[in-house]
Length: 529
Ligand code: CA
Image 1 (cartoon, rainbow, N blue to C red):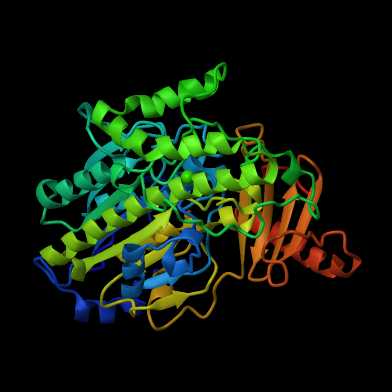
Image 2 (image 1 turned 45 degrees about the vertical axis):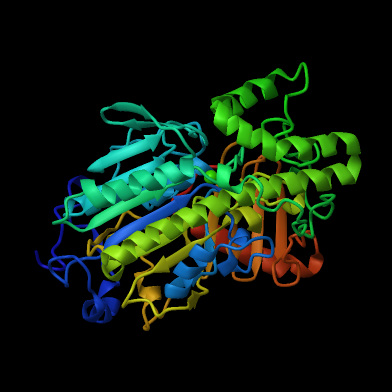
């Protein structure tokens, strides 16, 4: 097969292609490609490890102050860290639909977590498969419709379970005993080792449930961080002054919006709290007797100490932060360990030399920042995504990339990596050109964001906005309110400058840019201004 042979692209996409950046890096790639592939010049394998709600500020390579992630950091040392990667819509299913399609939520139809993904639309996985890749997705899927565009799929139904999970396959369901991050990795390694067609390059999407709520650690990590105080974020006790009304109206605070048992593992649930009891039973209730023994031994004494302390007010928020963040980081420790297993397998089999490894997560999340634990906002902590890419022979080890990129760019990037032309209809741009020595002369200087799920869980008002390298303008169109932040002088986004008379020229400039982006991306939802 010719290296850059055009795939047969069906339907409306035929012929509508965008020039790709692969040629920029091809020379260095070809000279370095090694491994088990029969042809050293064949296209690289792609391993995409995608987690759920892993914020960059809980990754060592992004200067985490609260944990260590040695295996993600090892990947970063081998390749590149994108320092400014952002989602287009900070919530699970929409981000996944954007990743697959390379178009914004209002075009792919998954505006929020309630919609079913229309699998008839073009995806990068379908196009890579048509171009000769062997494709698989294992783990979290979260798009309601069965996966299309894969030779193999084994997915968690809905959100999935942390313990003893059920997986869905084309042949029916299978239940496994154990911890979901270990099992997802086992299934991914099994497919790599025994099930794939070795005559083809592969695309493997290994997608973890962790570290999504309700943050249930695996057995090996239940006592990690015991006796340690995790540093608090500066905005843990935020009073939401200095911003519009949306920040005060939400329902995602550590102070008021957590379930004792389901979220905080203080069991049994309080009498009369039927919602907590139901959710606790759906999670802890899945543990077998041996798992329960390990779990109860880890939480029992700590819960007793909590009850005796009888905390309230700020001290209760601080305690909840510690419980939440430790469980969250314990889940990440398992993700990191299992990434290490994958990297070891690639190294041992020689696949590393011809495999692009990408680590990312569907969006960021608040780690007690602003007193919150969810995502959805255009504020930095939930807007940011981790993106670490290792590609031997192409990316100089230890590369840091500062350009503004988005999950919108993932589909074009994967296609470009595979030598497949990017359909014109995709709204993102391949990042391959940013990975080599010769950077593109022009790159975007702003990104567009639109969150759609209101009314909905956590009561975050709908908003859209623009972020540049330095500024962010947000429009809560249901409320008729705006916020403007200077990220250089106010990185925690505590003080909106929107009504500051001195900011009005900047406001006008950013509104023009926002209109331009809405026009470019054809977003007519959410009204005009
Ligand atoms: Ca998510």
